[in-house]
Length: 559
Image (cartoon, rainbow, N blue to C red):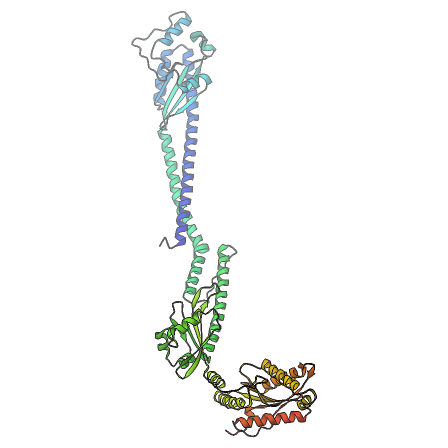
């Protein structure tokens, strides 16, 4: 749980940091307290030692050495000291031998003091002890705390003032030192109590701090992060309509605003993609061309109804057989896939249909392969038409256009196709104006060149699905497939205008055009459509030539 909760991790880190900080403060406080208490203790003890030393000096001035020695013992017991003694400058304890008695008697020139019996020498410090030397050289009180912080010792120099000279001489500035040793146990107890109180305060403060930190983090950090995390999980599950509160201007507020902007953009994009997908699906499902698509691994993921119809197989059969067996020729599919020309197609006989098949890989903009796609069109009519046209002599030698016999055959085919597919069909009849005069004036060779140029003009102006024929002499016809009245009139006018602008060796010609649509005819015979277009052409000539006229007599159509 701790590994998954950012709040718990933050709280642990903050708790550790706060604990270390507070522990450091407690240690610092305890050490400061210890130093303060010891300093105060030193001051009090120092004043006490000074007072004791002053009393000792007063006793010594009276010459009562025995009383001074007893005074030291009484002081030790009275103020609960570990030790109180006097030491000479050489580190030996005073009042333990006769050295001082001998010195005083010598200076006074008489036996003022009786020497002790059974004396014993007691060394408290070596002569080179740094504390001893410091006290002697500075003639000031020196305090010493042992390493275990259990004992405190004060060395107080006893000055050799004028009153002392008569007994001790003037050779030494310091007669000796008063040494006071006391226990620091009660000081340590005070420090321990202070430390314990500080530890209790530390625990209470730490608990309150962590509680407040948790409440703050939960409200300001954890809760907003949990809201964003929950919203992200919902988005992951597909619920894109997610928004989180945008609180404050800090990083979390900015993160919330960025998240909300991101989800709005994702939702907008996803909605747009859904609409586009719906459009694409509609187009694919209703397309007349067969469409088959695979995934990255070659599995078929999409087959539209037209593909089922053209291939004569069910979706299950197409999917189970695989992409390379779409038309039963894996080599053909492989050839199409590997061809660098994405518009390259091959025709194949599938049952009773001729199919034009295109296949290619689908790539991302970065070049990654997403899958493959195949597009199939029914070109049976086109194939049969091409086969038929190749089987007969269907072109006019002079113009390269279809001849009159081909025109009738093609009219039969196109009328049948338009009727089956409920598509419009229009026929144009065209006649070069005053062509006989041109032949008479410039000769038949020039006339032939004009006819050939006009044939080229028709080929340039028409679509691949249209048919241009030389009907005879200077008369031409054009079959416009899948073209209704308005489109046919526009095409006719385009041809008429282009013809008037055409020049052949400096000569210009004009053309009259008659337009008739299949829907205007009372039957479906080619002759009827030809007659209607010819009638419209006749009227164009009657109106002065260089005109486009639409057939306007539309008797009831015979079904």
